[in-house]
Length: 504
Image 1 (cartoon, one colour):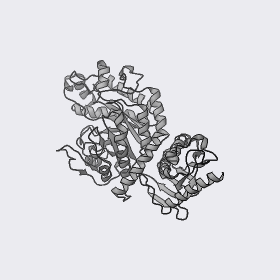
Image 2 (tube, helix red, strand yellow):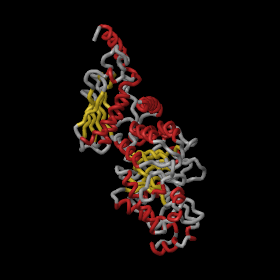
Image 3 (cartoon, helix red, strand yellow):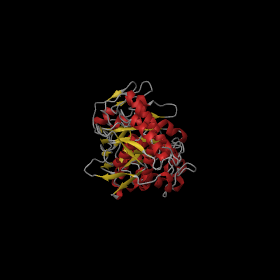
Image 4 (cartoon, one colour):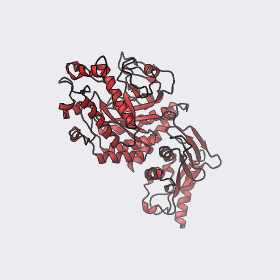
C-alpha cells in the first residue's frame, strides 16, 4: 500500500476506534437469549465475507447467506467485485445435531463461526450476524484508495433459541395477485425476523391460485402460479430458514373453485362459496387437491385446510346432504361439516403431514375433531381460546387485534410489542374478546401469526415488515425484559438493515 493509501486507511481506522471506544450493545431483533461481549477485544476488523461449510445440508443456506452478509458488511459502500482483493473473512457454518432444531451459537471472537441444530438454525445465526455489522463504519471508500475495504464486527458470543415453535406470517394471495418477487421480499423479511412459517392463502372466493393437474380448469386465469414458480419459491424460502405452508380453503370460501366447476362442486344455487361436501366424489376431489398441494410444497410438514365461516344455510335442500347424514351417522349439517374436516385430517395424516384449521367449529360439537389438529384462533368467537385449550387442542394466536393487517385496519408495532401470545382482542364491540381476553400461560399456545388479508401486492412489504419484527420479538424471547423504547431503537436499525439487504 502506498503512503497515500496508508494515510487514508489510518485516518479512517482512528475514527472507527474512537466511535467504538465505548461500545453499546448491538440493536438486534429479536433480542437473543444469551449475549456476551468480549471485554478484552471489543471489536474485530473483517474484509469481505464468504460462508464455508462441511455438511452438504448447509449448501443452500451458504448460498443465500453470502449476498446477505456482503450487503450487511459493506453497508452503503457498494464495493465493486474488483476491489474485493485478498482473502475473504470466512464464516464457518456448522451443524451440531445435539442442539435443538432452532438453536444456534454465533461466535465472532476468534474467527466467525455459526453452529446450529439444523440448517434453519444456521440461517437464524446468519440473520443475527447480518445485524451485527456497522456498515457506516466501513474503512475507506469504493474506489482505488483502499485495496481491501474493511468493516468492524463486535467480538461477541451469542447462544440463542426461540420460546415459541410457531412464529408465522400469512399472505392472502387469493384475493389480490402477488408477484413472485414480492413474495421473495417477504421471505427475506421473515429470514431477518427469524419467522420460520409463511402461510400462503392460496384459494378463496376470488381466485384459485395453484395449478392442479387433476382439475386444470380450476386455476384462475391471470391470477395463479405455475408449478415452476412455486418450486422456485419453496427452494428460495428453505435456503433462508423459511417453510411455506399452503392453505386450501374448505368447505367454505370456495367461490372460485365452484365457479370453475359448478357441475362437481356446487352445493346449492344460493351457495356461492360452500362446496357440496356431502357427495363422495367431492370429498375424493378435495383429497386429490390436497395430494397435489403436498407435491407442490414438499417441505411443509403442515397443510392448512381452512375450515372457517362455512355457510350451511340451504344445504338440507340438496338431497345429497340428508343422505350423507344417515350414511355418516351425524345429526345435521354442522355434524357433517365436522365429519368432513375429520376425514380430510385423516387423509392429511395418511400422507405424513399435520393439519391446521381456523377456529370454525364450536366447543362440544360432534363428531369431535382430532385433538392433535392445530387451531388458529383469530376472532375468539366460534371456539373460545380457553375452551380450545381445555379441550386439548394446540392453539396458534392469530388475534384480530393486534395481529391482523387488513388495508387501513392495522395496529402499530408498539401495540404488538405490548401484546403477548396468551391474549386475544377484537375491535368490534360485543365480541367476547372486545377489550381483551386472556388465558393462563400454557404450552398449548404454541405461538402466534401475523395475518395480512386482502392487500394489494405493493402494500404488503411496507405494512408487514415492522409489524412482523414486533411479533417476532414477542414470541422469540418473551422474558427478555427489554423496554418499548429499547425495542423501538433496535427496530429502526433492523429495518434499515432489511432495506440494505432488499436493495442488494
